[in-house]
Image (cartoon, rainbow, N blue to C red; front, side, top):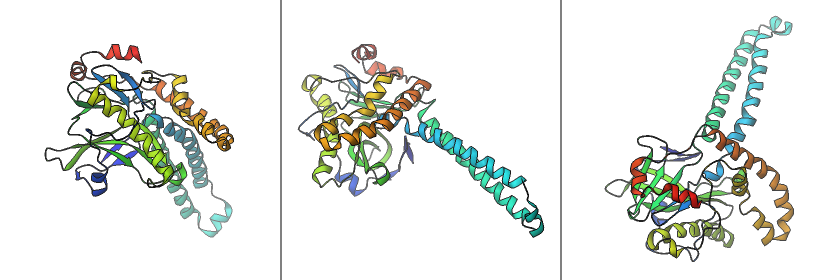
Length: 322
């Protein structure tokens, strides 16, 4: 089992029928357009570097901690007070012992909940500012960053990687089914999943993919992958200019751009939704600030020397472009 930020993916298993049916042929176009979708850190003739699919989610876990931890601490304090304060009525009835035990159990549950919120906090803060994926068109390799140091990068040949559009289970609370590009790393037989990572744009599809709206949302993922596919197959000259690069370090302006990406377009396409976008902009602004704070607390990812060498030691040139 592997965790991709907050997404759990089963490993050491065969590919199921649904995944096999959604596999993408990297030698064939998947969309008519190629869109960078504000996911690119840098690009040159050697490699293209994009964010992982959870980049835009950074801030959610910090929010859960800020709300949950104080609430559970208050719950623990109340439970402990209830356990140690015995009323005369309890003494007369003889129920004080059972009541105290129950309160201590509730306090223990509260402690576990506090610990869980700390785990969530560490998903966003004191981690890495971002976890990028590099596509090297000269060596035709894909590198996914996990952590600094030995064993911190997942490498897979472009032509052997299993790419597919991963539609997660629908969650009505968050607007539908999270949808993103995922890569499976297969064993030598090509049948068993041994590792995985996500990359590029992440959307939430509130409809079935067979509907018109569902197809439009799905197309955003496909167009973003087409940008990467064209780069690997035909080079940067085959791509439209990148509208805006993601910054490598913390940037409040960039965090605002990440969270507000596409929000203003909703009101432009459908004037009836303008009021909705205005109301929605308030929590989006708060999440953008949390995204920035999480990056401020986190360390810089460092690609290992062998990956830099395979990329021609051109990282500084690429970052200058970004």
